[in-house]
Length: 406
Length: 227
Ligand code: SF4
Ligand code: SF4
Image 1: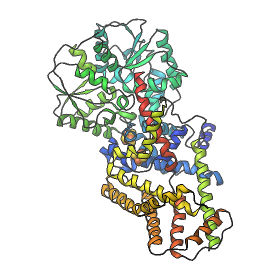
Image 2: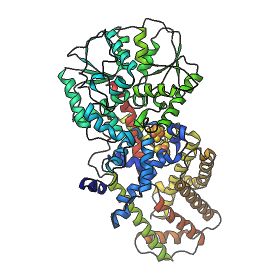
Image 3: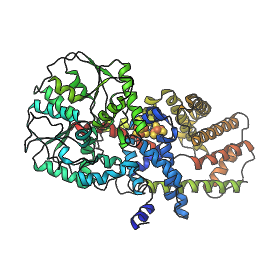
Image 4: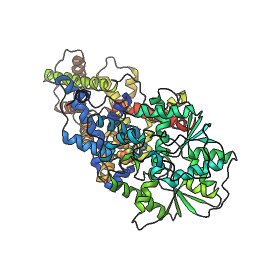
């Protein structure tokens, strides 16, 4: 066992948690109310991987290593089997935060689960499966998909849109959009081009991962470096507003980049729907073509619950002439995860597909002509879930839709 | 018996105190305040603080998630508080006016308490296995039910020598335990209560703080991307 691992074992299970997070672990009343909002529960029906059970197990680890008995008589070794069960339950979660939104006490689970994952990574128990390859992939290629930088923009970037070397506005495409949801980023750039304000982008080899997949899987070593590289690059281009369409990127940029950067960011972070809604309001762009269809909008967990962006996508969609906007039963800050969250979609593939199909089912049931998404991970997963499924609805990204109607 | 009971009380409370200190060390080991990195903080105005307290005392979050359970849970906590307050008269001499004032409410709450627990049990059992079952919660619930029923028995059927009991308790608090009055029913009530202390969940200390922070976080969510 390495010296580092030994010292980490000694550090117990809470060294990376804030006092509030440690209190949150003790604050859970084990009431189980959050289970009915958990999408993983909806498709697995296994209370043993539920939020209160995860908290109960984690309490056992704390008790064994930092509790009264261990203080008086020395720390014990947590049961290996329990540790493995806990780690699996923790990584099977999509970190969607619906449990926290409906927690009777108010535990911020969207933040707590990733921090507990970090603790398990420190113990050498996580991450799971291909998640473990991500740091190396980001280190060598700049993205978690191990795709070459030359292919980051070229397959989808519209030829008629120009990018400035320096500008007040910058656009960050993000790895998932650029490699796995290209109609979405193509739509983003198309709309930005129509708005007509000059915007800049980093060269593909400099637009590295925002750090979110590493953050969410508890692998935090590179986060400071990635943040400083990206923030420095945008700063040198004179950027005042950084626009991005991926909710996960937006989340880490707005909430965590200042922490890793060490101070306030020199620019504001805006989700593309905010930027476009503002532009529509200011008359810089208008959606002219009519769309006589019923459309249903799915709130991505990290956009609605994570960043509080609920109204802007709806404002953009409502500005489409002729459109009828429907809502999911669970929408806004109560939205149900489509299954793509928490970097679990590649490991617990069946869960993710089943969750995505719940979204498709409801859209079909509500007779929507189009299911509108605004997250590249949702886009990739819901499209995948549609393959071989008997229920069908047309899946469109919000900017893909808008770009075609301006 | 009095000495034995007193030693048990000291042991139980010592254990509880040490457990609490050990948890407090875990809670506050890091140097940071009650802030989660990456979470913006909203300004705490007087009105937000008032709303935060209202969230805690009204169990608003539970109300929004499960109103039938909220009804039982809120009633239970209120009754438990009133009963605990009215029991302070056995620990204090002279009895402060405010404690004396609580007496009629404490007595009424003593009757409602087991009913609220039965109601909670019914709501929970009706929810069935669809939800999470915490056996430790059921254990505590049944223990408090037994304590409250034994308390009602003492009041209605087996009235003990209250003056003797108070002398015994005050003696115990002053570390000079006296003779325990003869009353098997009181003994049952007292031992059940002693059994409860080590199992008291720590959410009673931390949940209010977490609930207050949740309100602050909800308020701050607006500033994450809308500053
Ligand atoms: S974060 Fe989402 S998936 Fe994870 S336990 Fe909570 S509700 Fe379930
Ligand atoms: S609702 Fe909150 S307090 Fe209740 S079990 Fe879930 S996480 Fe714990």
